[in-house]
Amino acid sequence: MDPILLEYAWVLVVLIVLEGLLATDNAVVMAVMVKHLPKPQQKKALFYGLVGAFVFRFGALFMITFLVNIWQIQALGAAYLLIISAKNIYDKVTHSQKDHPDKKPRKQSGFWMTVFKVELADIAFALDSMLAAVALAVTLPELGDFHIGGINGGQFVVMLLGGMIGLIMIRFAARQFVVLLEKYPTLETAAFLIVGWVGVKLVVLTLAHPSLLIIPETFPHSTVWKTTFWIVLLVLAVGGYALAVVKQRLKR
Image (tube, rainbow, N blue to C red):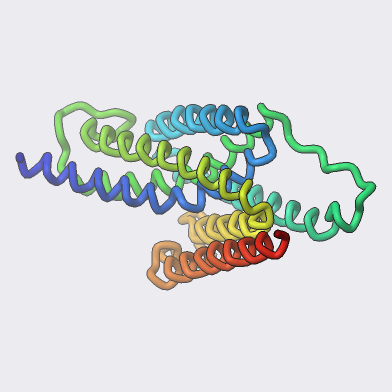
């Protein structure tokens, strides 16, 4: 195989693995958002969310140099995830149906509002993964003499393919998380804690943005932070799952 094509293939594999890792926390957020919908609508909401996410990411690749400078996008995404996490956990603690048998169930978002929320969540995640994709792709030698959105055509295709495969992975992973949440309802609290922790991740990215530099720009990509993030995420996921299984067995 041509050395340049081999290098492109290797970077594409790395991008797919990267998107797969990012898909874990993204998928939990998506699953929690669509869980309240009827099953047929859950699949539709995830599908429409996937289509919208693809359109957004495709367009964003053309504007990446502009979007990189807008730290407010990540800040809004962080605030959004932290708010829905705190609100849902608060509602569960203070408005439990067992403690308030006469209380009417809390009104849930309709189908299109849920799709809209899924889109917002993906936009919040998108910049981080796209910036990582750009950082990897620009290390490749240019392939061809055409450019798209200021990026070499070959590099653009690699980023686009990596993003498309990553989105498909997120969609199917989200569906599996929905099934898991339906089987173990008490796992939802752990899921919202994970949503909040992902919000913290976006806060860290925002604080390290070149326009702010409240914390060092390299910190979000440091071994210390990445290790901390994944350890806490695993503790929340494994601990929440174990607790949910125990509670489910005690009910039988």
